[in-house]
Structure formats: structure tokens, C-alpha cells
Length: 209
Image (cartoon, rainbow, N blue to C red; front, side, top):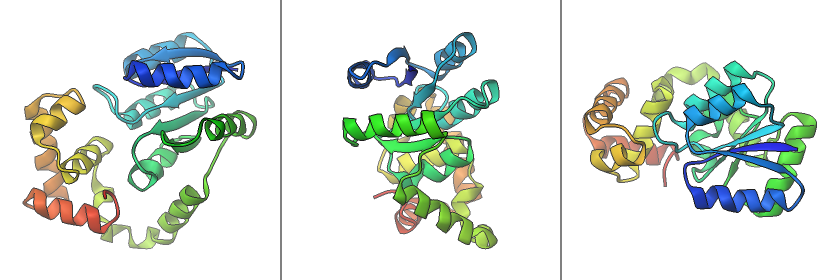
């Protein structure tokens, strides 16, 4: 089995690589979305493990690019972000599964094997989130955060988590002006004026803790 690990933290890549190499997997690595897309275009992989927080393009943006290049390539989102934040967006964008980095190594191996064999893995909690999403589809206009682009949603989550514009710019490798523009756009789409109002909304919806 050949696996591509896409994560910008060398220690994380090394740790995951050691776990998977121990069960006979052939591992390749990428630190950015650009590098990941280039590798996927040049080589064949059985599965890609993709983080959401990447420098430049977000993992969700990279996911869409990878699926465009290789529609049948299974991509597992492996991230620190809780399922409530990004699982629905990831699955709608074509992810084959969503797992958080605090999972046990044995579970990660089982999830990868399930996806490679069956094409998809849905945990009980993600299944419930998807069911809730479907049941509320007719009320979509009431869920304001669905209006946000993936990048705007990421910035909204970071703001609601207490990060400043400067810290967010450093976190996702964008300029302060660009992050400020995203903030202005997302507040307008959500019909809000302040970070406090945004934070209260995101907490109320269970999108941040």
C-alpha cells in the first residue's frame, strides 16, 4: 500500500509514517498543498492522508484540487480540528473519511484499510452529523455559516477561538491585509459587526468550544 501524508509539521509526518511503515505501508510525504498536487499528478497512491491546516491553501481547497486531478483517489482528512467544524464540508468536497489526530494508531490503521478496501469510512459521529445536515437541508437559509467559503469559514473558526488577525495570518501563511479582507467578507455574509458577535454565534452552533 502506498500512502501520501500531507502535513506541514515534520514531526507529525514522521510519527504517522512510523506507525504506517510498521504495518508494511510505503510512505511518501508532502508539506504543502502545491507539493501534494504535484506528487499526486506524478505518482500513484492508494490513499492520501490530508491535514486541514496547511500553509497557503487550506486542506479543503487542496482536497478539491486533488479530487479534480484524481477523482477516484481516496483522501482521508487527518486533522486536529473536531468533526463538528469541518467534517461535513470535507465529506461534501469528496473526502473518503474524517479522523482527528488524537485517535489511537490502531484505529488509524483500521480506518485506512477500510477506505482502501471499501472506498469510505464514516464514524458514528460523522454519520450523525451528516444525517442532521440532511434533515436541516430545507432550513439551510437559517444556517448562516453555510454562506461562507472554506477559507472564510476557517478564518471565522480561528477568530472565534480567540486568535488575532496577526496570529491567523501567521497560522495560515497569509498577509494580515488578506486575513482582514476575509474577516470583513465573512462578517458581512453573517450579517455581523464584531468578533464578539461572531464568537457567540460559533459557540452557539457548536463550531468552536
